[in-house]
Length: 144
Image (tube, rainbow, N blue to C red):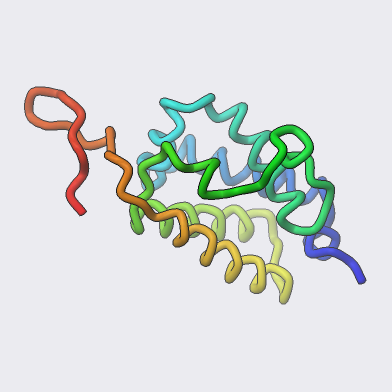
C-alpha cells in the first residue's frame, strides 16, 4: 500500500506545495497575519524546510523532522505561537490554495485536508498575541 505522500506525488510534489504555500504567505495580503507569526521565529527559510520535513513524515514518508528534532509533537512545536481560530482557518485556506495552484486533488487530498483541519484547530490557544498592540505601541494580549 502506498503512503499518502506517494499518492500526493512524492517528495518533489510536496516540496512544490510547501514552496507555493510560503510564496502565497509572503505575497498575498490576505495571509499577512500568518506571515507576521514567523517574524519572531527562525524566519520563512527555516520554516519552509521544517514544514516540508514535518509533512513528509506526517504523510507517511521519511520522518525528516523526527530525525532532526526527536519528535513530531505539533503542540510542542507551536507552544510559543499565538494561534487563534482565524489563524488556523487562514493557514488551512492558504494551504488549500497552494494545493489548487499545484493542481493536486483527489481522495488523498480530501483526506489530508480533513486531517490538517483537525490538527490546525487543535493548535488554537490563548498564548498572548504580540501582533496586537495598544495605542502606545506596547504588545498586549489579543481579545478572545
